Length: 289
Ligand SMILES: [Zn+2]
Image (tube, rainbow, N blue to C red):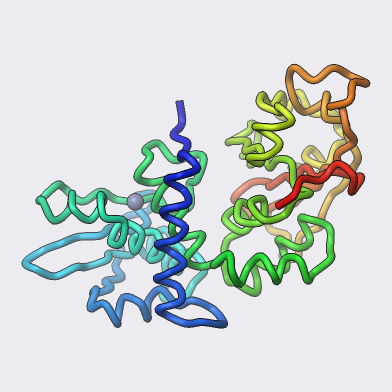
């Protein structure tokens, strides 16, 4: 069972990250390496091996150090490195994580940005901290509302503005965009993980995401089309179709009142697979965000 954060715990982390963000800057992009500089956390970039950790927070001889692994694409100033440092800053600021390191527990290597793929709650907490540090809700939500675009187009726009990954931007958008019902992250042949927005999970009862394997997908659905797009494409195309809730979620009676129409939008995210967003087609079905 993958970890999932309690809403109260998520709210705590969100408040913490928002404080750290506004300490850094009240407008514009938050800069994780500048935060390190101010807090005298030393950044060390080196080759630690491909596929090994992205980042690691170490407390040694009274000094805090963040190691960033070049071999996983964490070069200074890159989008990935920003997220990696923000994730390690999560371990630094979340009191329980910090106490463990101060007590001499072995530091762990982090694979930043795994989100729902994370194996341990601490990792999910640090990812949640990182997303909210880089996209502080007080700045992110008003920008999202002002865009007036379809959900996936908004995410593609905002990820450039906030310099964040598509996945972390999509998860953040889901929290603030009442139109978004669910997202699904696909690797090449299988679902990596699905996430249903809190309100549609709790109130509408969309709990079980049915699509698991590429072979289950009708060839004309948006996810199948995006999976067939080449991963080298520089400017990705958004694939879009209309589906029904009963097609995507278990325990939804076809034709019943929970079987609403959904807009399925999918885009290839380079070699990182495909991100698929399900949102309400009719405004009357949206949730208050
Ligand atoms: Zn970590």
